Length: 139
Image (cartoon, rainbow, N blue to C red; front, side, top):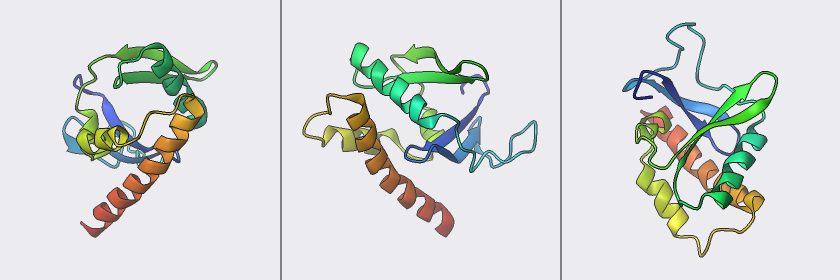
């Protein structure tokens, strides 16, 4: 994103884009195609989440960025892992990171298996996204 890519915040539960930025500017339409970047469903979302959750088992950093691309033939593939992901993702999500990290820290202990961790995240972020969307609608 710091090199000019479009960033999109995704509803973690549904796999649908809910906010987007280009540079530091919120956008609703893709700057090249004019197509909406809000309300786009990410294909194979459950697989994308499972890949990210499984990586956490092998690289126990606690917090990292997992860049996943969707290949038309091979499906979701890991592009790279970032031990120190850029904080510009907060702009794409229209939400500060500290709230999300604090929610995770309040858990008694992270679930051992990836599917349970995904379910925990989906439950919490579904609530967070509803509040975010309500705030945006009121603005």
